[in-house]
Every structure is written in C-alpha cells, then in structure tokens.
Image (cartoon, rainbow, N blue to C red; front, side, top):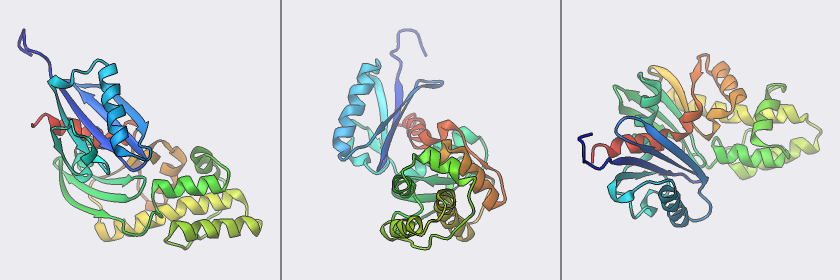
Length: 258
C-alpha cells in the first residue's frame, strides 16, 4: 500500500439458510472470520453482521462487500451480490489450490461444483426436499436425542440400514418407527449418514468427478462423516475447518475485483 493511502477491507458475507459466515481480507490475507446463526430473518442477521464488523474495527466506508447465499438480497450495504455457486467455487479453490469437485452440504440444499483453473465449469444442485442436507441430519439427531457430533461418532459403530424416504418428514417417521421397533441407535445413526451419502453418490454419478473431492459446508468438521463419505466414494475427501467459510472467502476474494 502506498504511504498515506487508507487500507481497504474486502468482505464476503454468506447468509445461508441456517448459518451466516463472514470473511474479511486486507490486501494480503484473511483478517478474521465470523460465524453466527441466520435465525428466522435474514434482514436482522444482516444488521447483526454490520454491528459485529463495526465492533471489530472494520471501517465499512473503506470496504468492498460482496453478499452471497440464501439471504444475499438482505444486505443493503453490500456493493454487489453474487451467487453462492461462484463464491463457493472461488473460496474452495483458494483453500485447496488445485482443480476440484466441491461437495457443498448446506442447510437446505446440496451442491456439486466442478472448479477448473479457479472457475466453475459445471454444477449440480439437489431437488429432493431437504433430505440429504444439513437440516436433515440436524432433525434426525434431535429425533435420536443426540447432538450432530455424537450422531456422527455413533454412526461409525453401527451397521447400515436403509432410510428410503426422500422427504425429511417421512424420513423422520421412518426413524421413529425404527426406534419403536428396537433398532440400535448406532445403526439408525449410520443409516442417517448413509442416506445423505447415497444422495451425494447419486448426484456425483450424473455430475462426474474432476480433480480432488473437497467438502464444504457445516459438516466439514465432522470427521466421522468425512471418513464414511471417503469410504463410500472410494476416494479421499479433503476438507478443513475453514471450508465452512468457502462462500464468504470466495465473496471476499471477488470483492477485490470491484
């Protein structure tokens, strides 16, 4: 930066259906990330994000801001909105630094994105209710009186059982019936995770694989899930704790182009 010039911040705001992520870059590196529940109202979440940025010393007057995700239109102080497909691809490529097939499991949808030379070359989104998403595993964990983390760990001890419904409501009924019939909780947990994994396998069979498989979204820190996904796909699935911020990282990087 030239002496006397005011430094710019580059900010990506990813308001998802269940969680909102924020990444702030300076000219060289990530300054910090923020994570908060989206709650029932994206507009209110947007206001909370603005307050948090100011509290963290971010001068919004000297910032370039990209909004993405489910609630991107609810960020009036953003300079531009960009789809989550583009932002997730940019962020995942920044983290992986190679061509990759991104599996993004969000709260309400699952996306498969092929990224080549840093750009989206193909993408597929699920269209089957909320089954196979983060919200699905959250509901099933609640039904089993478990945290998502405990369900994921317990699944490694279980035998696979089939949960056939493509609808979350009917899948929950299946799980309740399994509980009533005395099915082991670890077997149900394994069935829940494999239900998600089988939907991902179905999407990948149509979409195809290029480069490294890279998982983004809220499940990226569930190591047992990543282990099972790798086993079922027959290939190592790479990820990192930062992968849940892929959308906001990509948004911040794209803000540099404004």
